[in-house]
Length: 600
Image 1: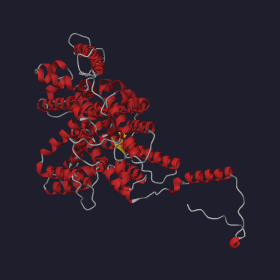
Image 2 (image 1 turned 90 degrees about the vertical axis):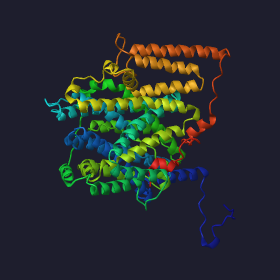
Image 3 (image 1 turned 135 degrees about the vertical axis):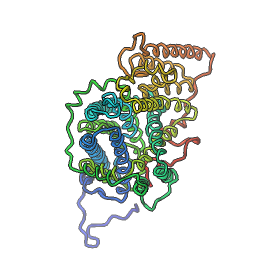
Image 4 (image 1 turned 120 degrees about the vertical axis):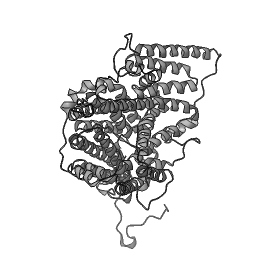
């Protein structure tokens, strides 16, 4: 500032200021700053226009995911008493818990920094993980428990089978939350030790198989209703077309609803049946059921741990993106928040994991602060405890919700490609195959169950010998698809290090594959030492060990100069990962804000 001559105390009738020491001025300044920070909780802009935009994006995406997940369970015979009376309230409580947690986190950062422009992290259902749990845990348990009448057409114990599958799903979800919490201590170290391409490819494989392929096939079954919805989503999310201020996710529901009712896909009778489910629900505290069915979870540890790991890594990426946008959050606190919210969901009946998700930079750019999380919490509490999901499913066809999942499946794959060096694309493609094999095997099983329901009661679809009887292709389909997430990570890591000519690390990951196969974490459903003659664990162990030996020989030859040296690190690509994933020339060019927010 400009310097001015000191004014005497007698000038213009002013009294002389008392003398203050430098220490006194510093103390007064610090006390004033502390008082301002303490009052910041009450002086933050509690309502901004950006909060409404962010709330619309977060609520509509989570609502679509929740409704499709609930409909997936209702479609196979789960009773409304479980879906609306137990699972939905658990979702509502966990949505409220997580949203308020990250709202408080943002307020704490605002208070500690003295800033008034902090934007809370968005929170919601872990969409890829939810569909992995439905397809790979809940439905297999449910179908295995079903029994049919003499005609072979009508199941006679639907509620019993659904109740058992729900309890196993809740127990698995609790274990997932505990895994996420444990990864809070070692997550950053795991991210350094495992190629990020492998971790994200395992997540992308869920997106490709269960979010993109499955829902898209359902859409093509009713083309007049669904295809307009699919391409409206593509137009809104991939071209940036504006719909007069209406979010794409809302517009597609409106158009799908109009076509559904006009075309006779929805009926008043069906809506009246759904309206019967509108009432107050209290939810249940099911911690006793979790411990009672904990032993049933062990066959699915090979799925639960990788899902928890991908959530942990995804949260680290989200925190890094928020930091680039100007808001620094504690990464371990965020990982703990995800794990705690997932365990809260399980304790109150939800089978779906929860997580921070990408979107903070876009929401901050909108002008959002913290209130959108509060609005999300209140909305889901009201919706989930009153049976309103039933009304929405009666009014809106599921074909209007599936396109949002298709979009998420595409974006999960694009996000992985965006931070993947071009030379590692073969590893990405290879890593997708195990999930595709698992999904294809599930469709084959569903076909058999639909065509021969009585005979299917006595078939153990988890027996490798059953699949062996249908030829090498079907046998390989089962073995490659079993515990597909671990398989995806291991195969992707081996391929990454082969491409980079780091043969020693390729050998290390081959040995990891050998150990995982021997104890049932890869290529098997049953856990334990698979060393019996008819089991395949020891066979895969020998196979991966022999590959590791080959890589050891190549490493020795490399050190002696007989083969090329390891490829140098791509510094530019490492920089792009730290900066939030700059898109490669060969990747689809979708702007960060469009991808992250799913906005209109």
